Image (tube, rainbow, N blue to C red):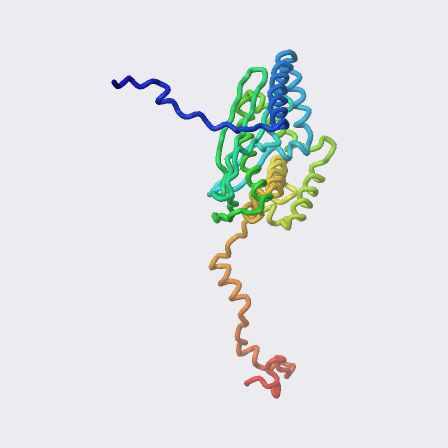
Length: 307
């Protein structure tokens, strides 16, 4: 007699569990669970004061060094991509309080040349959690070409750089939009106005000196600023140049991308060639100068020149 199939017959097989767990692993698992439970309890007992969080944020982003690290810029196609950095997101989470976030490497497959990563952020008060799992190829791209990575340090740095962008978005997803926008306004104001006791002329001189250290000339900077000379740069110009400088230092952009060499036109080549080509002397130039009886040096008899 055939009996109807039971649910147990169609159930998926249980995932294999390790046959042995060391004492250190067991202690670490218990510690992690207790740490999370304690963090949630503390967050509920001491909820954030939003007014204090906003004040902490404003104080932080009034610092010039932090404001300069808050934005990035790089070229993509025919335009520029602008946004906030991971440093900006982490500082927001710190000021807001009661937020945990992290980046985990779940699996690394050297044979396939890829790593499985997870970025997450968790608001302990509202219990709002955002996470994303993604695969990072062990490849570094430059100028449209990929180079496989084999050095463990290169793989680690590649995973961290790719994971930082996902982590930034996870942090932003658990923070209020109005809080993020206020932080951007404060950071932009700090960049545009600089230190309160520093005149604009000194900021211009410092900006030129910073870029000269990278091999960028004043002429390239002036051309990048819509053709304006350095003494006419505005506070907004200085702020954008500071963002470009930081993006180049972090490797998000390159000098060639930000300050491309202008192509030489056919008219310029023709003009340069004409200026460099010596012209044939005229009849008047070949004859002795009137009243002197002297020939030009290149045409004196006996000089070897053809008369």
